[in-house]
Image 1 (cartoon, rainbow, N blue to C red):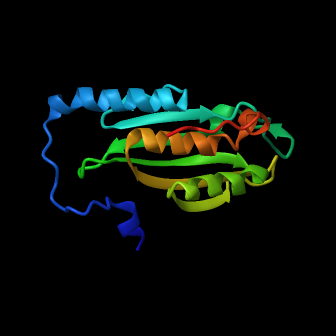
Image 2: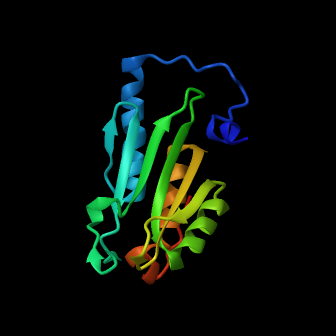
Length: 166
């Protein structure tokens, strides 16, 4: 069952014909819209566009010793084009335990599949959780859905909530 969820759910199993150079500007434009929607720049590496959001709002410690943000205390989204023509995203939110339920609910509300929720570290303060997910659809829709979930983390969680228009 997991393999079915991880793959493309296109109704037409035939692959979409693509040509290398002709698709690059379209993909670049998609990544630009994703970046604008998330208010964060990403990095394109081949066919994958990665957006990293450091949790520099937290001071994470393991048994009293500080864990640097760059040591994996970051939310990461990996966008890529599926052969069916849709955009897919897989990723992980790094959240505190008190943010986890709200983020999971925001993802599920947008039909984003939550694969796992698990501790990020052992003996950490505050208690950190890792929420892994996957989804496919239109790039801007996916970015808006992820941004809505991001509102439940960090400094955004404490700010007045804004509605994100479609």
